[in-house]
Length: 147
Image 1 (tube, rainbow, N blue to C red):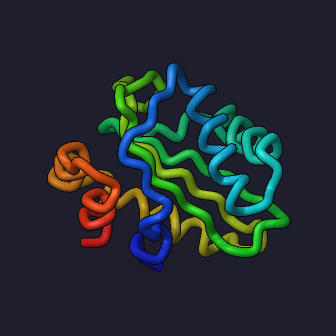
Image 2: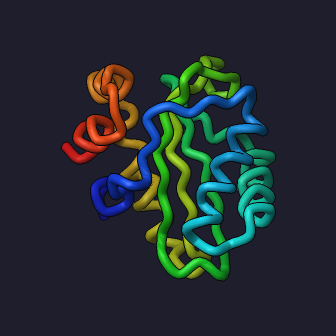
Image 3: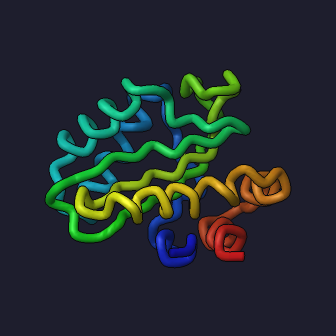
């Protein structure tokens, strides 16, 4: 599994405005629902349930909200760069401006961890993060994530 497979070009948003974590998760759920067919409210509830266990803000301005769904056939990922960082209760207390949503089929337990690792490893690299923050378009973001 690699980022290029998880994040096709049409699942990258170069600039998204959200007032707070709740609004961001709602927007992510809406966008994921339109592709996966899972009701927006179900996705939002899954994300909020996971966030209640502890923030998915991994530090360095990055968050990887994720949840598992029984009726999801394939992995779904969506990468978003926020216009402005927001409080995500990240482990380092820093605002989050780079977000990668991951929805996983319930039956893919082992692959779930591999997918999270596939996303989180490059998003801990300071050079990658700087490149993502400097990219001006969704296609430029995709090029950075694909390398």
